[in-house]
Amino acid sequence: MMEAGIKNITNVLDVIKRINTKTTIDDIFEELDGFARGYGFKTTSILPLINPALGKVNIWDVGRSNWPEEFQKRWVDKRYIFHDPISRFAMKNRSAFEWHTAYDHASRFGQKILDEARDFSLFDGLAVPVMFQNYPTGMISLGFDQLELSPNEIAQIELVCIHSYTQLLKVSDIECDLSCETLTPREIDVLYYAAAGKTNWEISAIYNISEHSVKDHMKNINRKLVASNRAHAVTLGILSGQIIP
Image (cartoon, rainbow, N blue to C red; front, side):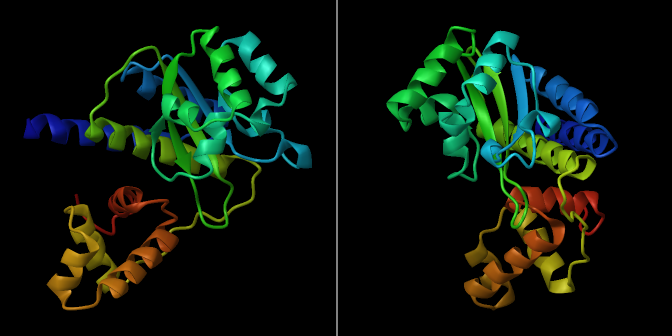
């Protein structure tokens, strides 16, 4: 069981490394879609969550999707992005969620959009919000008919999705600074224990510092590594060579 877990983590890191070498949005999307299909997903979309009414960025100049063509056309022509329950739910959540969860919290019109999606065999899926401080908010949405995922599998998928969107920002025309700053010795210590699954309280007890101080260290780590959550920071710490696996 442990060997299988290590193998899965190694595979995820290999996929992330390949994604980080991609220089076009299409290549990033192809790599992400191939990874998702390995888990049993049928469709993939990677989208910046922007207001199309502003006209500054065309969502499809940056985003990609392999939804059924007719549904994608309807989604664009009817400006479903304004009411899409998955997009709206992603704006308020930092963790991955399944489409039916968004459906349960949607308006009547939002539920109508997902009902229409089912007419095109888009029955359910997993959405991964990607939020960066001072950066555009994005979302990866992976469709499936029927799929059971373990918490570990969801965490692995979430990491790859976050890295895919990060790389998309790097190669797109959206202006952002994704430079990776060097962590301080104490921040490296904290990140090591975070990688080991320790809570902020446990780390504070180990170093005899306040839990608030640990939270501040984690905030600085996320800012320096441009990470959107704790797991993402650990992976970026490994890939940047600042901590070892």
